[in-house]
Image (cartoon, rainbow, N blue to C red; front, top):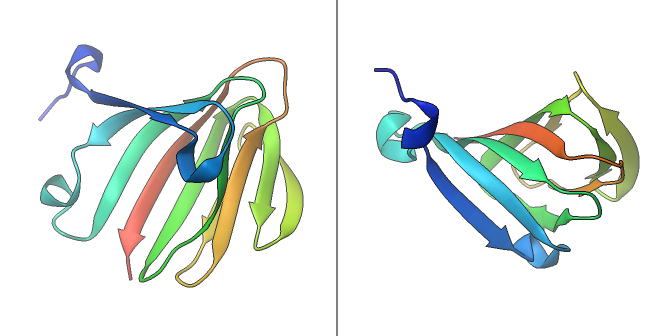
Length: 116
């Protein structure tokens, strides 16, 4: 299967987990059915300057971010850490995280959520 860029499902999430602004999610795979039931999200996402994903906790699943470009603040279970292009974050089941774009340009990242 090849999915061309115009064929990707795109979602605009406003105030995602009570964050600021919106996140643009371009789904690379369309949920559990294309992930063999092993996960629910594999997406290329963008936060514009000042936008954020609010802090939230994952139950029975884990989320990984690969920071593709830009810079931001990653809330790792209440500890704020700076992230830049090339960084990878991991939030395990029962843990929480959030992400804020603190740079002058878009913060782009790949998000992967897998079930525990």
